[in-house]
Image 1 (cartoon, rainbow, N blue to C red):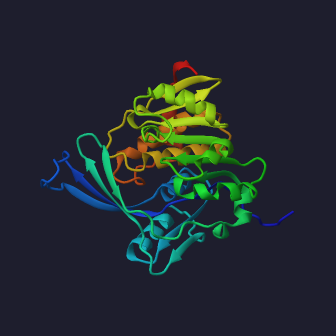
Image 2: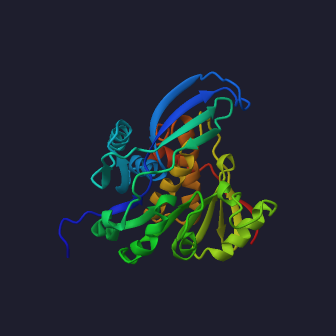
Image 3: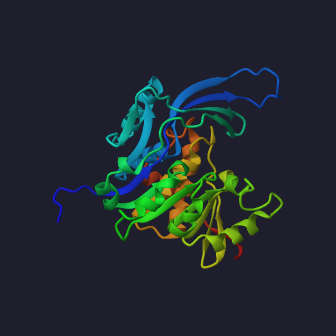
Amino acid sequence: MIKNRQYYDVAIIGRNCIDYIFVIDNYPEENSKKSIIEKCMEAGGQGSTSACCVSKLGGKTAFFGNLGSDHEGQFCLKRLEDFNVGVGNVKIYDNYKTPAAYIFVNRNNGSRTIFFEERTLPEVSIKQISKDIISSAKVILLDPETTHLAIELKQFLNKEAKIVYDCERWRNGIEYLYETADYFVLSYEFLKLGKIFSAQYPFLDKISELRKKVKGELIITHGEHGAYFVSDNLLYNVPALKVDVLDTIGAGDNFHAAFSFAISQNYDLVNAVKFSVAVASLSCRKHGGREGIPYLDYAMDQAKNLKPVFLRKM
């Protein structure tokens, strides 16, 4: 037996970036000018934001990611520390730029449009990942940038560990996650990409066909419409909470974080989705993906108000 070994609820491997947020009152036409009402800066990235969310909910998390040694990277590192996320597994690269996202938020409805820089930092490698940490985690959360690690990570997991995959956009190797992920969580936007289905294919039929490909549980996030899940070949929707939305930045990341935490705490699928919808909805009350993250007790209390709605047989 290994003495003094630490155990983790969720180990997260993913993207770090810096978010520059600009609030406007409506979207301008192309080739025009528009005034900015408010601007702010926050750390972002799917994996990084998810780590902050798990930590605020009270989970013990280990986060692996890369940052540049620039000012933006130092800010992102500090924001992780602000949420009590350990930064010992974050690798800093000299002479590399921390990627940025430029986000325009419509003040009238909280919708956001994102322009993002592609990562130039080296991708997270398997050599960066502590086998001791991964083998002691109850849940592993992978975001799209770490799809390539799934095959190698599988050999390090303990037999009870679960893999949650954040399928925001298409990545090479995603087919392996169809078979490997215990919980395959994709966004409505992913289904619109045309990689799997034509644009004319009905939304609910896309879910039905994807259900045939995915071996584990299938969950779909859909913004203001909440989330969908399949249980015993029946499709359900959990509507979003009614909140005063400032913006929807990071709502999906917080859904994945809350879902991973819930699974680590042995929630069943229905209650895990309800809890995650509540956390994602509540996170929209502040600008940026982190300040609106609720504490555990409040999220649990709000989740009780959500009722799954049956849609159809699959």
